[in-house]
Image 1 (cartoon, rainbow, N blue to C red):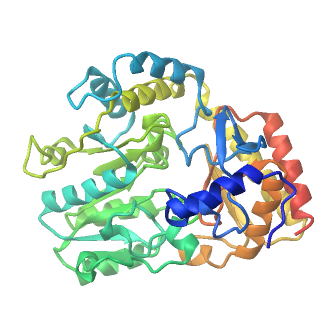
Image 2: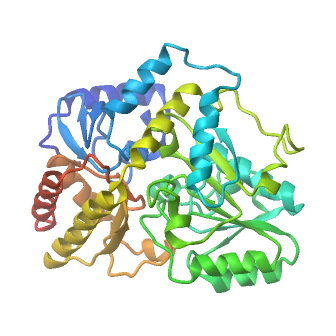
Length: 432
């Protein structure tokens, strides 16, 4: 039993009621705090870099609604644009000029995207791009990487990361084996394993999909040569390379991880930031591939709320804010200081720890490391992370409630916020 110095009376009451209404009391598994223990916090409102719970406790938030709040929560410019859009209606179910505006912004920013289709979530984007990979190539098999999470569609729940890893669930309960027979897996950062899969399955692999920076098994960057190697292998075998940039898109750089690393995949999935905090997803890529999508081509995919005017509005305004000079330099500066000093504090306190950051994304593991893939990440001291997480929560710092999740900063995080976080971390690390 984890005791709390926080007043969490209302959170406890609401969560107790929620468990009778929703499976596990939540709408998404990691929110239940199963891997870190203790009482999950019920939020009341958010602003800037901060979140307040229903009991009035304030936290510096390093989740940022799992990535979208890159400009800070409830940014006034985004709210103003949304208020104006609300007057025109919440949903059209018909084309709007807003879709054109956001589509042009995405195409201008992301190197691989010549045409784009908007959907409603990252899961839907990845599910759709998988169908497109198969339709375009006429092949059925795909390669994904252990610990990479591409949403909860059946064919991706094979050695998935994120909530599946956190809860220790079987890879794909309830999913027919026939659905995942064509899903091949390899360790992240292991080109030889990918080459072996292509050699063992000649002419049958539609493509490779990956998070170019893993965020759903913790923060794991690609080794030098890994992404170029994947591009070379897929081209050699006539397969497609797909970057799942739902998390990294517009966060690692304005053009995503593909801009950062100078690799142009054939297809890309997006989400989170391009909706400015509203439900959204997108997939796009080469014009000849996207021409397969209905109604231009035979591959069917549709959605009632796709291109929703509110999501488009919030996305447009968010991308406008991100285009301002110095944005990504500020994100990198703040995040680098946070990540580097956290690691130093942990090592000075005698803990085995490794980690790092790229732009506004960071993470660390309680293991000596280095961590190149999910198997390495699983060597982390999960009990120590749980105690660290609870200690930080007690001191007003809200981190992702799982060792296997990346953290996010925003343009709203100040040097004072980083000072506060590091002071809290020093106190917690010295007591673990």
